[in-house]
Length: 297
Image 1 (cartoon, rainbow, N blue to C red):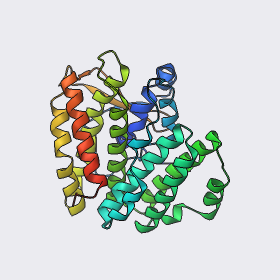
Image 2: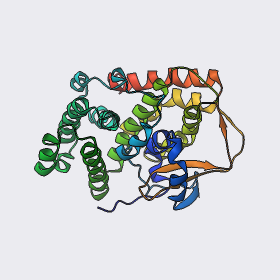
Image 3: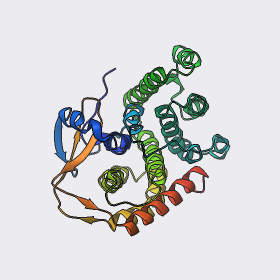
């Protein structure tokens, strides 16, 4: 399936930045795949945001300093707390990110449990048609083949994108993507044991300021919807935390690869001190936990 994507619409595929870029040995290849560049301010109401891609998570596992931490994923028992559409859609993104995370590390049993939750929520938010019997059979028969898990996760990812696009469900897309991005940032920040200015992952986290600013722009375009409006309020502490980062230049760019992965670069550098890192870690953890325990309205 061909998926519509623009440089800015792909920015919520945070794994393409955080997880793909963490794999230093793949940077040259990624640069060769870049198709085009655009100023991050170039966004409009016709753009939509991609759910974090499981395909790019496999590059993340090349960073030997980052290990799988089971306790970081959203407990499956929390699904009973999601009773309104907003929390269901946001946490569909959360569990989708968790499923991709488990898949990236070859954790078959964990990813299977998360798939069941994603499938259940898909019925409740009206996108259950994506999970055909053929797809279900593939998952049940995959056993512990990591490559097959990767392919299935990627297929689900693309099918969801195309389905939501075909149904013009921009609000659902925004909420799912918000939940997925928050979960990925939460996972990557809490996978770093301590601040080290020389750790490239620290810079990837700092670069999320670009991703977040554009995510907020998209949400603000849809704030006439009550669920989107309250989501903007939910994210306000994180906005304050990112605002404290020092930006050396003001001409950042975002670019996409053949797979739709996003990279942030160009002529700017975002600096993050240890205090900045600790603040972002504290804030994203609070925001994420608030979302997953359904305290947001």
